[in-house]
Length: 55
Image 1 (tube, helix red, strand yellow):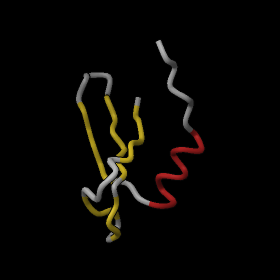
Image 2 (spheres, helix red, strand yellow; image 1 turned 180 degrees about the vertical axis):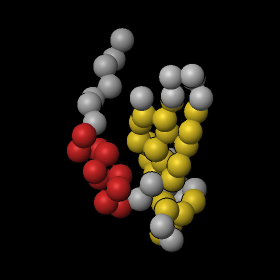
Image 3 (cartoon, one colour; image 1 turned 90 degrees about the vertical axis):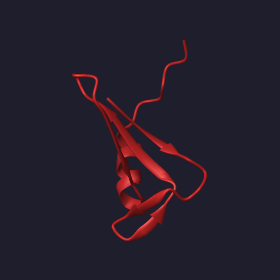
C-alpha cells in the first residue's frame, strides 16, 4: 500500500527537481519506505489511485 502526499513545502529533489511531494509505501512486513516524487511521476500514481475511505 502507498500514498502520495504534498508536504506544502520543498523537502527534497526528484531527478534533480525540487519537490514538496512524497510517495510513502508500507510493505507487508510493516516496513515504511518514503521517497520524494515530482511531476509526471506523481501524476501517474495519482491517476491510478483510489480515494481514501473515511471511517
